[in-house]
Image: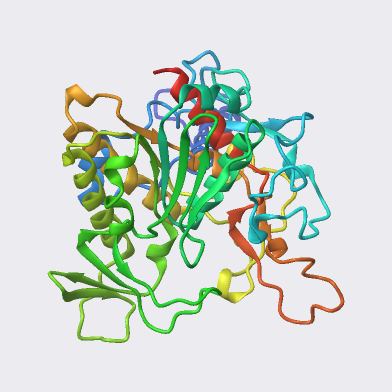
Length: 431
């Protein structure tokens, strides 16, 4: 009895008051726990908060309501308008659109089948956008018929090369192209489809801006790359007037040590040896390069249709490229399993903000010419489909005694990139 409170003078002591108080506190605590659980789950769906200097720019590009999903990752409104870029991967029994046996354009580092990858589960998934049916497969015949006499270009880094190989393999199912050109390193290439007078170019420009790169074929640098913030890479702008459609992207190269120049003079660096230069962050250099590229695209008198493809994340676990990281998952992530990914989200946010500014600058008369190919979310969900150790031929064979290097950035072909082309087909169909 001594633990019970005394009644207020003039009132009768109520029996069971202690139990009622406990019940009320239990209800309040349960409600608070549910709220915290919902917030925790939502944190895996939402990008991290924008930095103050980015908030205004990002505000105009946030995807409408895509983050207001239930805690199980399903859309809050399953009947919402079809959004090609917001969804999840679902099982598919039809298999890949091509194989290593039917396409001769798959380069060794992405040829996971020929390199001995033993599992093929990663080939049996299709992208299912919320509010849409499963996307129909890329129709190479329709594409080529509609693109007679046109020139497409893919401009960017090795992920764009990954993408170009996929597109060539899909088109080669209709007509086998001729190899029209390659540079000394085979990083820039051109294919020609004479039956349709159609040209597909791959243009190597990993930073989009002018750069001096001192790397061998194994990615080993002899000196720090030098980037010119005030000049674009001539490899693509010199050919700009010949392009009718362009897919452009950049990204992972900005994580490298680099020196940055303007007017030919060094103005800063990222983790460089010369400590007299001010540190320029990855975000700053990425934004500057994108801004320079978009400025050219929006002010050039030549107005091709431009797809900007968003950030392609890596999936290294237990380390990075240089420290033994691996990627041996066998199934896609569900949307709520992708984790925090703060740096990936930051880079994605920057490019979306810069794209939104460019689209606004392009003017009403060019509305729709700049298209955001936002493959970030669908790529983030595919940790199972990277080349991993199968970037080389049978890496675990007895005669291979060296350290096995994993590639958890580039994608196996065939693989998820075919869905990027499926989406492009749908975007073109809307024109």
